Length: 231
Length: 240
Image (cartoon, rainbow over the protein chains, first blue to last red):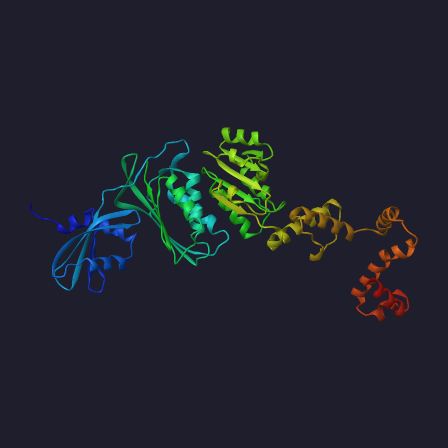
């Protein structure tokens, strides 16, 4: 082994690793932790590190059940060697959520970007919402029931109908996957974020998402869908 | 695009339907009767399969055998649970003012067509259109202005058209036409013991109203009419 690229190894580690300074600023975050931060607030994660930090310089592993969205962890390891920084690693519980996708003729290759675009157009017909769309236009087509997926988008958007602004992000998640028919599938992440929302359609959204093998995560001011990429 | 609409809102509905035309999606366009729903959908779906919700069997056959279907009178489908949308592009049209949740849950997209009372631009557009149409039909060349209060929007485009045709026609009656019209009216309403007094209002009231609008003063009008001003005042009070 001529050179050991430690940073690269940390970057690709499937367990999230985050290093904060004393004022909670993130000094380092690996790819997996980027995914975690889509489900948890920076403040919560920093407090977690402080709560489980060892009393003296060094590292301590604690067994603890944690869930952020569909991400489940069974332990955390917190370490520090000075008062300048503190590192937190979370240990994934083996993936528990599995889906069996019922194959039927109503599922067709679908361009998620196109679906999102028509849903936003329909939503803004009679509303003046400042929508910022951050999207990866290279996302490949995935097999979906288009009608039900558009219904899911319509219902989700309607929860933000009185909001002044709405940020929508669509991207392919790196290093994360969902098991569908025992096959690991890449995940397309769709997130609606604002400063609050209605909750009246939450149950329908949950049902529709599950029917589509999509993992919903409905929070106070945001909704995230993890859509398996099946092609 | 050949749409008889100036409303930005209606054009957005059109664009939205257009953008989903090639997708496997079900949409419903609902709202008052005679608001232009069918015309709007026809612009995009003239070559698709059209069926009416009155005939459930026809609807089910279309859903089983065609990929692009327009279902009119959707509210008339007797048992909505028997209708399932597969891989088709479906546009349903309903004359309901509101949709219940069972219908809403069937569709990915829901559009409400606003009535003409909420579409001033379209009311103006249709008024001009029907006025020209009526002028052509009745062979009238003179300019015609139709007062807003004469426009009937109670049944949207249908009642608007009817009120405009009536207004155009009435503004261009000759004295012979008026005599003929009154004759037909009197034939049907020659009842009671004071027919002369009862029906005189038909002649006197519009004569006085028009005179007041033209001359503004009762004194001047009494001179023009050639009657005593006290008599005129009495008649104004009587008909007001």
